[in-house]
Length: 208
Length: 208
Image 1 (cartoon, rainbow over the protein chains, first blue to last red):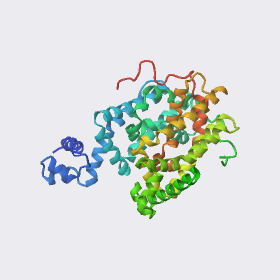
Image 2: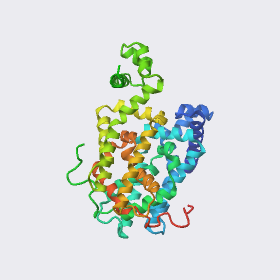
Image 3: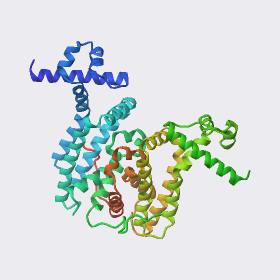
Image 4: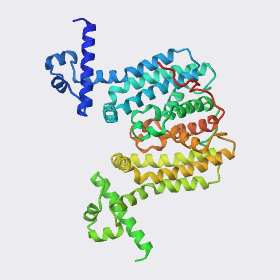
C-alpha cells in the first residue's frame, strides 16, 4: 500500500468516524469506529496508531476548509480591507452553513473542541499567523499605524470574536451578519492606531 | 410585617439560597431552600409565591451591582469616551472579581443564565437602554456620525462581546485587559461612522 493509498484509506475512515459522531451524538473512539465500520480493530489501529490520532484526523478534516480559505485569501490580489473582510467572512459563512445544516452535531463539535483545546490550538495559531500577515500588509498600506502586530492581532481577534468563536453562533446567530462584519473591519481600519483617544483615562478606573 | 420587613426577609433568604447554590453546585428550588435554611416551606412560599420568584430574586441580586454601575456611569459628569469605558470596564472588573473568587460557582451561574435566558433578558435590555443613552451623548459630541442608534448599539455590543458575555471569561480571561478594552472604545469612537471604507465590497463575498 502506497502512502497515498494509506492517506485515502485514513480519510475514508475519518469520514465514517464523523458519520458515527453525527449519528451517535458523541465522540467516537477507535473501538467504536471499528464496530460502526465493521472493520477489524487491527486495521483501525494500523491507520490510527494512537487514540489521539483519530481525534486529530477529525479535527484536521473539520479545519481543512478554514485553512484553504485563509491560504487563498492571504495570497489573493485584492485591497487589504477586502482581504480582511474575506478572511473572516468566508470562514464565518462556512461555519454558519455547517451550523444550520445540523445544529446538534455542530454543538457537539463545539463541546469537543472546548474539551480538547490542546488538539485544536495549532489551528488557532495558524489563524493568528495568517492574520499577522494581513496586519503587516495593512500597515504597508498605511492602516493601523504605530500599532504593534501583537497588539493589532489581539485587538482584532477580540473585536471580531463573535465571528470567530464557533459556539457564539449557538446563541447569537440572529444578530450576526456579513454587513456588520464588514462595518467592524471598516471601523478597525479607520480607527485603530497609536494616535488614539483616552477612553481609559490616565488615572485608571474611578472607584464607584 | 411591613413591606420593608418583607423585602429584608426576602433578601436574607436570597442570600441563603445563593450560599446553597455555591455549596451544592446546582440550582436551588424552594423545597431545597426550606430544607437548607431549616425554615417551614410555608414561610418560603409566602416570600416566593411561585417557583420562578426565587430564581428571579437570585438573578436580581446577581445583576444589582451591574445596574448600579450603569446608572452611576450614565449620570456621571465625564467626557463620553471615559463614560463608555467605565460603563464596560466597571462591570467587566466586577464579573472578573466574582469569577476569580469562585470559578466553579461563577461557571454554574453562567450555565443557569444560559438555560434561563428569558429570566435575564430584561437585564440585557436594560444594558441596551443605557448604552443607547451613551450613544446619543456620543453623537451629540460629534462621534459615531451618521450611524443609527440601533446599528451603533449592535456593532458596539459585538465589538465588546468579550467584555460583556459572562462565560467568555472562562476561556479568555488571560487575554482580556482594561488597556485593551480602552483601546477598543477608542477604536470605535475614532473609526465608526457612516463615512466608512468598503471592506465588504460592492459585489458581496467572492466565491472561493
